[in-house]
Image (cartoon, rainbow, N blue to C red):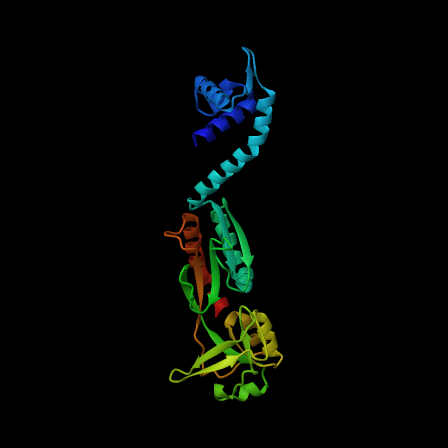
Length: 299
């Protein structure tokens, strides 16, 4: 960083045109400022300043050099600040990926509360219902509601279970079912991050059954599936937050209540840090502490 310090000294001298003032601002002696400028001139092989007993002014070469290095020094200074802030718990930038529904309802008030406590923190939030590549897409952390992860490279932290139930439109033939083997693949509306088919694993506590879902319809959005089920198209397997309003208004009912799919999990996951950077650890702790106030929305 010696060259960086010499260039910063030169740029401040170019701005102030007074070596004594530069020395005071950089906590250097006037002689040290003079030596730094002289060493830079010697290295470049050009004269950067014209010095008289009354003033200091830039030469033409000095003015050109100052204009060319100014953006680079500013970028380097910003990079140094960002790296330093990344290791502080109360400031820096967080890039977060979250599911659309959760981002609009639960994450928003949590972020507002966090910003009140840590006003120097800044955020970039991206909402997406599909899994993201947290490393390639350069996220600091992602929030997901999903089944057990298969990714062996990222760090997953389970926060709480999210149950799911089977629902269908009241009055539809699906409400009369006694066993899931009465369902056909065309009856089952599949949720898939890539809009593909999925397999439903259902258990009554003693026996289990697997059903192919999505042959007739699949979507990567729970609200779409809830609306399709409410229209009588088929049966959907969804967590409570996607169907709560439909259940409340009677547009959907719980079917096959004795049979349950595996729970999903609300998780935080991160790039493979050896230790979480302080700003990420601070937000993760705050998110987990604030979540109970919103847990009813996940059931």
